Amino acid sequence: MKANKDVFHDVFTNKPHHVSTMSPLHVLGCELLEGVFGTVGSKICWTYTLEGKEKISKQVIETIDEEKKVITFKEFEGDLVNKYDNWKATLHIETKGETDLVCWTMEYERPNENVPELINLLDFIIGMSKAIDDHHVKMN
Image (cartoon, rainbow, N blue to C red; front, side):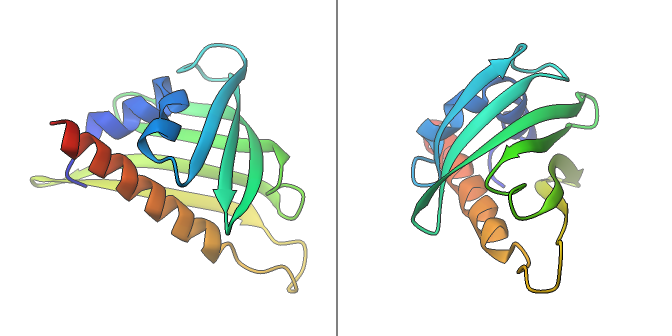
């Protein structure tokens, strides 16, 4: 990504409600349900568009590591946990030399072989990340 590594970590940790402005084709909004943005245990609700359909994901922030630039979200209610068990996503910003890498890890369990892998969600995350990066590069 071209934007500074701190940008991504800060956006998803402290300002997730700004993501819809940076990536409006992907994210419609992020509402704080409980707690304070940027604190472990806080609950948020994402509204997003996946394959042309509006979806929701209510998540709890499981971990935040400011030094390592890591944040983990676990869905407790929403469209993903209706089909998949134990869905969580971790955003980790890593630096290799002069390059900042935005790394997303999704963990989930498919209840059976008939439930597809979440390739469409991976495409969504890549598109959203690129849109956020483009937004910050244009601002600078």
